[in-house]
Image 1 (cartoon, rainbow, N blue to C red):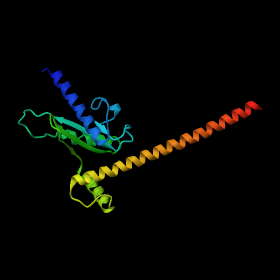
Image 2: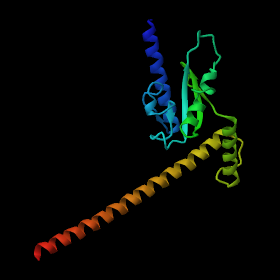
Image 3: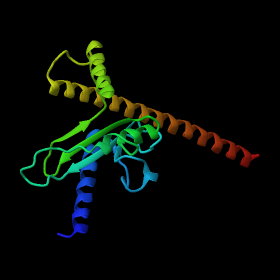
Image 4: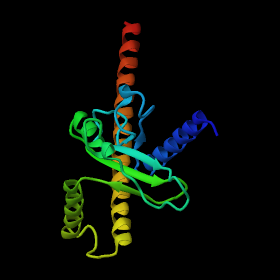
Length: 190
């Protein structure tokens, strides 16, 4: 297989993994990630606007040199240094940064976050437990499910608020239209 075909396959795999991660997290894939900085740094982020995003993620699909190889090799440049995901997240306004990676041909993926961010996640779960928003279970799947349920309810509330706002706005626009029609009719009869 030619080098150009191998590179094209790697880009396609990388793009597919970026899309998978973005969908899982409810994020967007940054267009032309890795090649066009004007779209933003990183592969995925939580908002369309780079300025408004809180999260910036880098996604890597690793191709082992042989089928017997099971090690994941994380390159230092992905995490530290001037072009690392952490440096790019700081450059974009001190965003939360993460590196998500998988091995070609597997469904399992992993993420690396800073220890400070891991501590924040632990604290957030403890706050949810203390506030009795989730149960005091040690079962990780149960905690994930309870948090997903809370998130779903929040999204539904936000959508309902947006719909109520749109309805109020439409009602106000109709009042304005009637007022203009009445004034136009009045002026035409005068």
